[in-house]
Length: 497
Image (cartoon, rainbow, N blue to C red; front, side):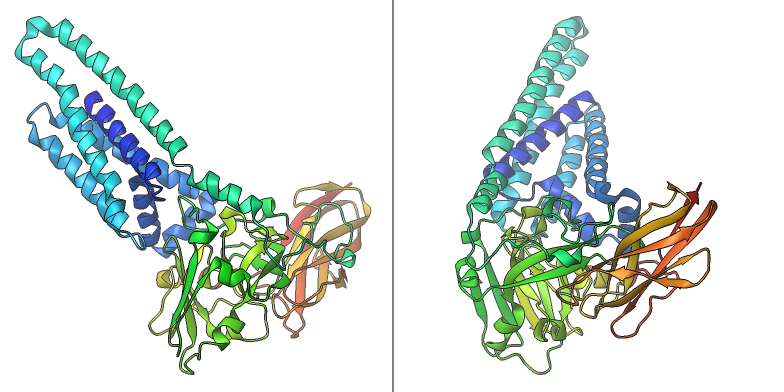
């Protein structure tokens, strides 16, 4: 069993190192993990996100590695009976890895090389390790010597595997090189502007109106983030258009750049949750690109595809109306961080990200919803995904102790591409009291709110609700995020003394 585990780890190390040397983003383990994510039922995926949060993908990888270790030990134990049984295990594992690798978008034969190298390593190292054990079984009088040989070979294999994996990590420095390119990049038309002063009400503890890049929520299905050099990126726009268009990065940034403050939020965000943020996005309006291509009047959506194969279908109306739906190249005045889609991603105000926000976007296919389905809509989520009106209490926090008397409450509210007209706060089921609102540059951003309430001694319940500029008031009906966003009023409990 130890021989099987060591041989298995050696194969993983050489396959990983090969993928790094060839600058292949997906090592076989990563490819398997991403295939599991794509095939997982929507309810299971949502549950994993809810329970594990940002640990969902690491937990998946760890689970795959534990499964592999069990298979490696099993292959080793099978060597007691015959030489060919372990080969079956190695071959099946390699076939699964190969299938996952080739299922990746734009995969070619070169992507299969890490799997082949891993398989050859498994077979060769396992044979070398079990040879000493078999000689010991045939000649018991050589037991101590053969065991020393086994231990020596096992030690060499363990050290070599670790060294190969580490060396592969250093050799495959693709992300580090892309990060250097990103930091040195200067994009014409991109500016660094501070948010308007009146957007902040100055209440300590309320989320800043402009979310720093490092604090912006991150949701995606990629295990290994695509590292794309700007000069290697291109975007194809095709489908139900009179003329196809392929853009390089240089082509894109040479066009007129639009800059807008836009709030994004995830459909998985629970009532009062933090999967929402506001940033200044810079990019090229998608409406301007599509206007030049002669879009078929029968088209009603655009299927977006990421470099890692993730897809979403976006209503074409949201990409061609007056909102600043864009191919974004910068976030808060700097080139996009890799984890937020560098070099290019899509940003569409008023829609949840699962139908609009494609990081590392490389393909836009104009078509119809009848023939196009994205990753999440294929798992039962709503096809259109308009953002629901929402509000949140940031201070005090639920469970806080406060001084009896006047207490300052504050938070944020949002209804992108509609705007917030008013926010009201309720204490212990009493009358709704209107809050002060910060100013906003457009209807596509969230707004800060604040109100002072007289809170007597004792335990209290506080709720908040928002009303949009369309007259719609936030519902108190509680619904889970699936299939089209959570509803309900954020409620906290405080104790005054």
